[in-house]
Length: 51
Image (cartoon, rainbow, N blue to C red; front, top):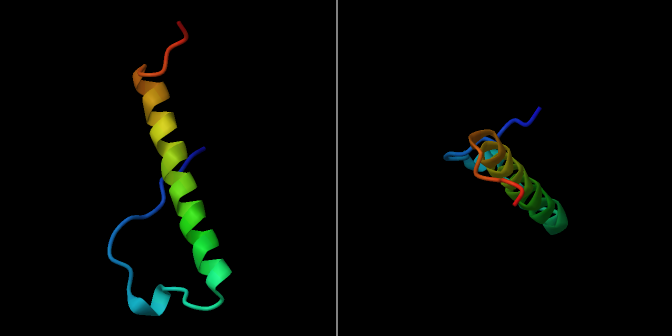
């Protein structure tokens, strides 16, 4: 099951500032989640076809 990552305004109390590697890892995971969601939607709607 793929659950799209939450999008919207994030309060400053929820942002990660230190350590820097953790902040970048979380950004990468969020981007990967959006990529998975886009592929799932494309597959369900028939945009991805084998030719």
